[in-house]
Every structure is written in C-alpha cells, then in structure tokens.
Length: 301
Figure (cartoon, rainbow, N blue to C red):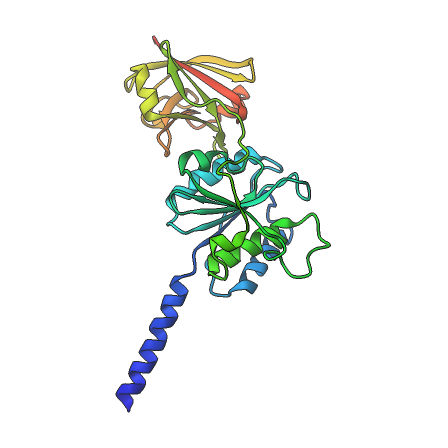
C-alpha cells in the first residue's frame, strides 16, 4: 500500500511538473516607466490568468512613444530567449485607433504580442515571419474592460499574452490569420559600395553615450581596415551633416587615451563609436533613430 501511495504521489508531482513546463516565459516591454501602477496592473492581469506563469521584464524605459526603440530593444533581446517565449511589447501612441492588435509567430518559434505599428520591423527581418494573427477582442480581452479605450496594454495585450503563455489558448485561438506582413519603419540598412559603408544608428548605449550602428562585423570587414587602422566617419540626421571626423579602430576603450574617440565592435559585433571615459553622443550631439545614418570609409592617420 505504501508503495502504491508513493507511486501515486510521484506520478502526481511528475504530472504537475509537466504542466508547469508547458508554461512559456512571458516577457514585458513598454514605455510606461515604473513611476505608477501600469506595469503592476499588467502583471496582475497575467497572474490572474495563471499564478504559475514566469514573468520577466525586458525594459519599461523605452522613451515615450518611441516605436523605433521598442523595435530595436525587442530585436536585441529576443534571440537570446528560448523558443516559445511570449513577448508583450506596448509602445502604443495610437492606442484606441484603427491600428491592428496582433500576435506574430517568428520562424524561430517566438511570439510577439503588440500593436502593429512598426514595433515588429526588426524581429520580422531577423527572426522571420511564420504567421501573424489579429487578436480577437471578443474572446481575448479582459472581462468588463470594454469601456476602457486607453490601456490596451492591460486589457488586451497582457491578457492575451498571458493566456498564450499559460496554454489557455493556442496560437490559432488568438484570432484570424493575417497576411505575412507587418507595418515597417523605413531605415538605412548596412550597404557597402564604392569603398564606403552606409548604415543606420538605431540606438545609443544610453548609459555611456556610445553610438551603436547596425553595421555588422562582416560588412565592416569589406572596408579592409585592420585593428589600429583609421576610419573616416560622417553622421547625418536626415540629410544634415552632424559629425565628420576620423577615429582609430581598436578592441577596447583603453586602446586610446582618456577623452579620445574610437571605433570598435560592440557586444552585438556591430560597429560603434565611443570616447574613452566620455560620451560620444553628448560631445558631438549624435543621437539615434531611423532618421540617423552613418557613412564609413578607410582613412589615413
């Protein structure tokens, strides 16, 4: 009898562990900040769906209304999360308008719950689009929230994301299938031609003022500049020249003297600009976004 009881308990625990294992990580991103209760409300909704959910924060410090930075931060982090992770990204200046509320499934098996307003630009390119579904709010909306028009992050996205992550609904039950296309923000992709590379400045390494470009290491190598060589740099805001100069290409910030500019490959192995113990952004008034572009050329000291 004791052996049977043991087997029953062990089987129960094993089944429970399997059920818990079916819960996908749920990751939130927003421009809400943490000064009020908005993030807490979304997490409360998610926990109300299932208190076994594993909930994480990507960031809630996206600058207000900055869809482009939301797109970048999502793309920066998503590849490092396991297959099946559900991201809920809410930077939604058009809340309550006719923009679509969607869930994108990437070819890598990640899910993104978000307004279709450009937030999906970069993950659609880097991880690929497996399928897109529009959220059916008649089925996937927080109960008694129909009179709320300005907090879809809580009422629609957090609720739908939690139901998907907890296995309460399947991806197919999110809503009707859409064409495999999303709203995209236009920007300069890295291109090498005629001895120069053109690229975009998608984001700053904000804590230190380093300027990150989208020029990957393989594209940068086409310039033929080796470590210790020099790079001519032009930075434009739309068509206005903001910075022109040359920097050495080094491995680390200490490769130049304190206060001097440099070029290096960042943690994503993209070309970046910095100042040793200083802020390149502050000193030269270089910022980021889809309207910011950079041109690189090989240069002499």
